[in-house]
Length: 191
Image (cartoon, rainbow, N blue to C red; front, top):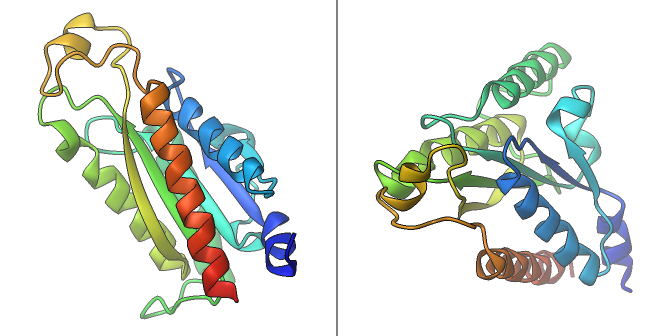
């Protein structure tokens, strides 16, 4: 294991919120791929870690489902709390200069029963703006289809067709591959 990989290993966080399990499945796939690459991230649910200082990490994955084109309330609460804290601490600066070595990946699960991925894109942009305000470089935004739990018609007759059982093994394998590619990219940038 290289020194760069050891340095990255202790400073990776996967932070997520999941009501139905879709986003949790993606978070677990990210963890698996990181561990296969020799990186052991901390994995935390947003509701369990309101006190987490994101600046302690060099790479933060933040995941959430899309609820009516926005992150759900627990995620919004977390972001608002962090924005207030970091503004008071002076971490958020005019022009949002990048903090060297701080990177983020945002991921969003969505069912898109009415307009497809366009229901998720505002969530990814919102999360991305949060990190950009903090000075993190947003290296990726991943969107993963997830079954709409609780209404069969929205999982079978929506814009995306029959999405029951998603994210499925194929969807999660794509996430794992995205993580492997990200690791390669970050390691080549460190050298």
